[in-house]
Amino acid sequence: MTALAQTRRPPNFVFILIDDFGWRDTGYNGSTYYETPNIDKLARSGMIFTDGYSASPVCSPTRSAIMTGKYPARLHITSHLQGASNRFHFTKVLQPNARLALPLEEVTIADALRERGYKSACIGKWHLGTKGFLPTDQGFDVAHAGDEAGSPNSFFFPQWQKKIPLDGKPGDYLTDRLTTLAVDFIAANKERPFYLYLPHFATHTPIEGKPEKVKKYDAKSDPSQPQNYGEYAAMIESVDESVGRVVAALRDNGLLSNTLIFFTADNGGLTSREWKNRPVTSNLPLRVGKGHVYEGGIRVPTLASWEGVIKAGSTCGEPVLSVDYAPTMAELAGARLPRVDGVSIAKLLRGGSLGVRDVFWHYPHYSPQLGRPAAAMRRGDFKLILFFEDDRVELYNLKDDIGELRDLATTDPRRAAAMKKRLVAWLSETKAQLPVVNAKYDPAREREAGEPMGPVTAK
Image 1 (tube, rainbow, N blue to C red):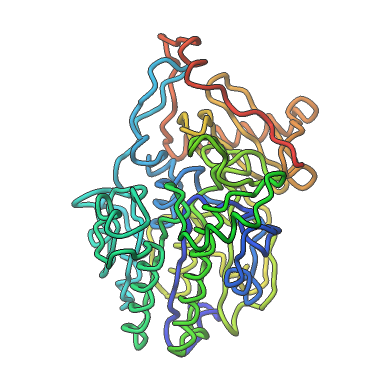
Image 2 (cartoon, helix red, strand yellow):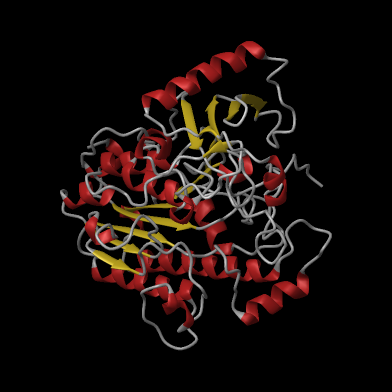
């Protein structure tokens, strides 16, 4: 066990995952419209990862990476479950059929921690399979609300029961109900090591906040600003209140000094017009959002807090990815995971460095947000994107161009070629499923379905 884990007992882990939550959707990272005092306080109490990433620009693949420490490409879980089959028959390439569930033979972090005496709970969105592939089939002792559903039909009870298997009282708000169950789990297990996985359905569609909060944000909304949607802001405030309640429960039960809290998102904020024909949020200065392998789709708010262990107010600029959390928790708990793609970031939590490493993304699908099939890698400050439709690459220096507006592929061809070679090799190593050329490509039908989004510049 590492020095970081030398506490009076194995550390507890609380993993808070927000759905479709943009990199700029918090006060600590520059939003002046959304109010996130509890998330901001959590950021001040620990470490902000400025370059925190989801493993995918959509939800299910990222969740599989969090569970296993493996890249979605290796797991063949590369799309959200409802988009895993080939729905488009007129596009330039045919996307592969991804898996519809996390295989039972995969060892999850809950499996590994169980061997160390941990009690584990999954409270919220699962989206990694239906009956036979639920959280309790994958190492969790307790599970609430999680099945194959990617979103509720409503955030209010009893309407949410049409899709979400969770009880409640009339008028209950789903984010609040999940938080109450999480707080109860903490209190019930304060005498033993535990792993609380709290994957909220918020802030996924339907965009539906509490009326009194919506009214408050509508009153201060400025249409000239990129973030101006009161209903979404209200959802964020409820998420923020959830974070405050979970931290308070840990404090009230004397657990903050022995609990590592992770806070992150499954993909970037929703900036397409698929909800009521308007963008939900803005990720500016990042390019576009959910469904794209540009930074707006994969760079997400990422925090770690552990009282007395992680230096308060610290910042880390090294890339951290969804695949890194499972090996980190396993190391700190003295647990074992089989081969993983991620690395333990325990050294980063101590203020150290992992050095330059290659990190990868693989999204061989057409997203509802008009993203195109692509893979990407980052090495140091540079990021390469390979588009499968035409084998075209784009290269960006994120240090100088976080908005990915200046493609360097033609001005720095040697770097682009070297990174493309490494990316292609990684795709082969992971046995990634690739799109294939479509002999029945119909450009007219593709135009009817919608054109890809172009560059987005900051206002």
